Image (tube, rainbow, N blue to C red):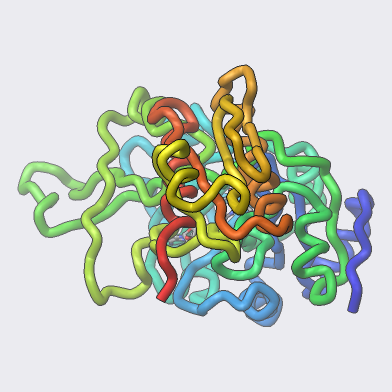
Length: 331
Ligand code: TXA
Ligand code: MG
């Protein structure tokens, strides 16, 4: 099979109705979509991506009313979050409704839901009478795709159609927060014990979310519990080449400027290749360019990739999160 790259929303809808897997644009990254209610189609998503079955998928919806059949009781604050950030790059992990197949959620009793803002994703979802389960459209563990061409380069022989919506405007995956129940959170005078926790920093800065629901802590890692904390696998979002994050001048001395490719915010270095994400120093622009730049550095013949720490504000935290995970040594 070889994918067609095209802009035909009806063709994408036809294939999805027939149980096929189709790559779709969203404002964050491209997704690998299937009918969330069709278990055979969802299984194909895991296979195409070579994703382990313990890592659950996000369900994408077009309208607020789609939520009713997908989730159980909404935790406090959920309505306010949806009103503030949907459609947009925020995934909410909510109590799962019975209609959602266990395969989608890897057997968890929660489901991740997101309403994408991309006009083509919206139009496609409006045309379908089922939601779309979709992880990022990259082979498991690799950098997420932000153009149709990125998807074709890696998965082009495994899916029939890539719906082209242009380069993704956010460029980094959605922020994921979930309502977590924990023994230590249960207080006798709250009807619904628990609190919101951050599973993955992403396209909406955590500070903006905290303006709506108050402090959103990062959960403690639990050892030997599956699934590994969502979106929290240490080695992830990774290019094939070694990537080091830190003081680039020092790293260039250590690794040699003639064999290093550098990923920086706004500064050029004396290196084999520079990817400057935002010469003007704009973190939104940097996020938009991050994954394409990582792919270019992975493709040229430098031996290592060296990256700066980005400012820990706005989308800088999500960029740093991805770079640190990309730099984590694989066993
Ligand atoms: O921006 C995005 O979120 C993109 C676009 C395509 O929507 N999707 C995306 O999906 O990044 P994926 O599968 O690459 O990452 C989703 C993360 C996974 O790490 C998964 O573990 C976590 O979401 N997740 C999904 N459902 C969950 C659940 N019920 N509980 C906890 N984590 C969940
Ligand atoms: Mg992913």
